[in-house]
Image (cartoon, rainbow, N blue to C red; front, side):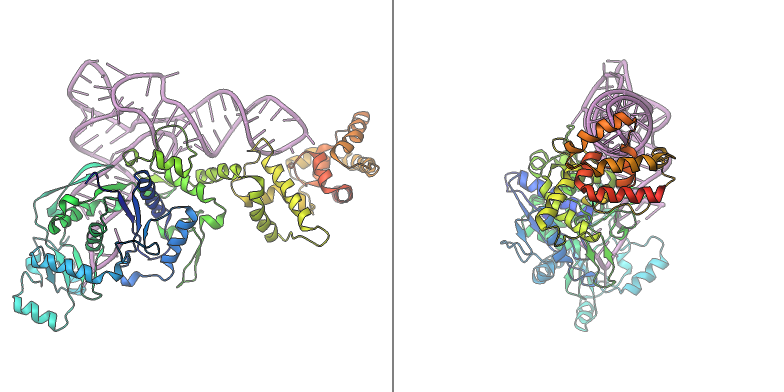
Length: 519
RNA sequence: GGCGCUUUCGUCUAGCGGCUAGGACACAUGCCUCUCACGCAUGGAACACGGGUUCGAUUCCCGUAGGCGCUACCA
């Protein structure tokens, strides 16, 4: 089986938006498939009709499209192993359930949920297994004709896997090595429900992976405890020699407190747990997504890849191609990783800086519009565009990419607001204002404004030629107070550049306002 | 409770018997400077504990403790 073509799958159930841990699992499957020249299958595991959520499937497909994770076959991608939606494979499962039943490796159980609950009340730590199945209503305890009669009378039943106790079952895990669990602690898992004519996860999973010729099962650690059951199922079907290899990935944990990251954490923790924004069709609740928060897909992918895997070197920024080349399941860590969203932002910062200035314009545009800054007929589109680039250049810095710590385009607003909006008030308690605006400052600014008023060439050079000598002669260092006038705070670009950008008229207007207000 | 997985700086991690235990994020300080940043430099910060094995354990084995997961007619 080692010479067989690598085939892996990502198989979510459409019970809601894909969560970020699922994204990572899919990513690892993708990296593994690409590295081995294999195929990645997209399968929908909708065997629980009660939990189906409309729109979830489309959401998941859209999320992977955005992230740049491509599937080779599956729902919406085509392929020769379909159908790829489990709810469309009823006949197939039915056939294999019958096979197990005929071979005596599974049995029919009529116990209702209420009866099972009662048993759980009655017997502490009740488990449906070799020790207890003799006490229950099933095809092992009931006469054959009675079983037949119950079925024909339309009684609901389930098919349970008959686990033989007392055997050490070995799971050979690529990440964790040899994992052994004794079959006695396993319960007789439900494989099939007559109520909706559908299998449960376990049966569908094994049948599909076998039929779709899956070679490696790469999934979350939450499946490790049921892996022995899956091994037993492969054996029961006689498929042991083509059984896929397993790799159980460590879980993504909450950044603070305990437990694994879950869908329900939503925005409670202050960061998105979903790739895309999700509008819940039932509750109408909106959960934020990485895309809408201003993350670049490459940044999300890069960050996620390194949560639980590390190629060994000190390089952290990697393209998809590099990751495909470097990826190695055996280098995955075994313990859960806390989700560090501060570092996620840093990755985004890095990828943002790799982009050319023009790439920032569309998002910056949206940001400005959301703040009420729009192009006016006086400022033609091209002029506004140039302004934006100028502003971006200030934050980004020609030849010195890293000038500002900008993790998201939305960070631009507090840093560049003054380019577009004049200060409308001043905070006298501010350290910078207190230090740089004193008794005599208003008067100095008045004199300074007069000097500016007479400058014809208001370019950086033009200003310098007049202001530098004036400052020298009068022993005044006007820059910080001037900054308060134009910016309102101790931030912003070089003052000559800012004044040149704003123009003489606006510069003088802001100065007058500051002088009047601060006195 | 039972079963399984796991344990290196606050966080993500490198390490695969002998290292001043490395990097990144975050944090702090200094330099630069018309401000804020950036940049540069520096700094604090970790092998959970107890037994073995070994000339020698962060590394291998066994316990203990902590963390996580599973324990459904959910996946």
